[in-house]
Image (tube, rainbow, N blue to C red; front, side, top):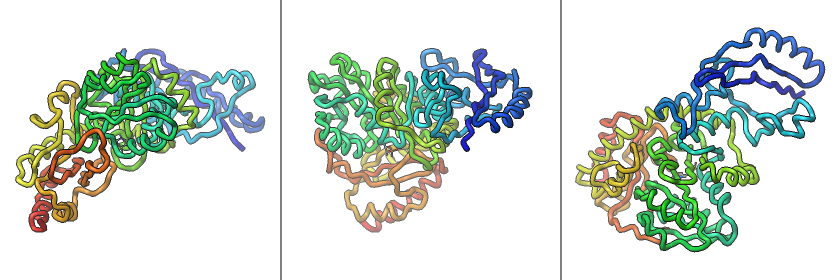
Amino acid sequence: MSISIFTPCVHACSAHTVRILPKFQLWSSCSVKKFFSRVTEKVNRVQSFQPVKVHLMKSSSGARHHSATELVTAGRQYSEHGIVNPGVYHASTILYPDTETLRSQNQPFTYGRKGTPTSRALEETVAQLEGGHACRLTPSGLAAVSSVMLAFLDTGDHVLVMDNAYRPTRNLCNGLLRRMGIEVTFYDPLIGGAISGLMKPNTKLVMTESPGSQTFEIQDIPAIVAAAHAHGALVAIDNTWSAGHYFKAFKHGCDISYQAATKYLVGHSDCMMGCVTVAEAHWKRFRAAYEEMGLCAGPDDMYLTLRGIRTLDVRLERHMKSALHMAEWLRSRDEVAEVLHPGLPGAPGHDIWKRDFTGSSGLFGVVLKTSDEQAVDALLNMLTLFGMGYSWGGFESLAIPCDVTSYRTATTWDREGYLLRLHIGLEDVEDLKKDLENGFRAMAAAG
Ligand SMILES: Cc1ncc(COP(=O)(O)O)c(C=O)c1O
């Protein structure tokens, strides 16, 4: 027997207050209805007109709070019963009370895949964080990338993709997109406004990522946006590094901002999630394609992501401070040839980063003086606090070797030393330095 409970209707009465209306409808089979009608009466008596304080959030245009506050309050209009966090709705079937509603589809939630209070709470929070019109969730960050490309590209279209793209994005371009007859050109991520020269009449989309998540080039997004828009193309950005917190894509003119929410939004390395936020002008097209592809995400993962977002501001601030500290320390080490951290004065991309970003996260690159793989292996195998793993953005530190020479086509990576990618987690930096010192000693012994 399935019972559908229409939960109390939450209604915004003023900027900061939500009132639970005395509407509590429950229904299913007749006997169940009778039983629940008694419960309903009681619940209504208790809940009628009891105001629940909820901070309502406005999207970018009408933001009333600082973003740290918004991260705490956004999406909470979906909470019920005074419980701080929105409920986790596991739903496929959503029942309709009568044929009129069924035919008109005039109820807030109609089908599990199309949205629940859990997904809406997270989507609205992300849209607000990014400063875009609306957001949809995907089961992974990579699905966010593919949903953007599939939504905005048709057979015969041309897309420009940064040459430092995360490798699975390249695989998508070289595989599925090319099979679909979509033309792909990889471009130098440092091209800036000169991207105009690569535009063709059929160029519909420019993909960007700033900084690149392996070699940390900062792109001149405003210049790329100006060039793309002049040619009628849209600009999408992979905004995972800044988590949408330190780079406001829509303020810089982007049309689409997507993230591997798996990283900083989740923040605890315990689930996969993607999110795509879109400007109002392009929302209809994205939303239709998203629904046509049958995309959605799991409710428990949505809950974990929303929970992660609540602490994003403090976590990112700690990642930023610790990573900058470690980057400076590494720059002073004899073993290191170059530190690729755009937030570090003098590092590549720092000037544009300073102009466009309000902070930096915990991920950066280190070019070692050695290119001896055995010595680098000795370093990596000695580390105990830095784990070796690919998905970053969690509370833990990571160190991973990067091979960026084998697949780039528009640019060549000219550094000679071995490239490591570090993620600085929430551990104490003194412990992290000791861990790396041990590693450097092992490297010297092996080299
Ligand atoms: C910059 C960037 N974008 C997208 C992704 C894909 O995210 P996911 O692993 O959630 O599919 C990753 C994953 O490492 C990434 O680093």
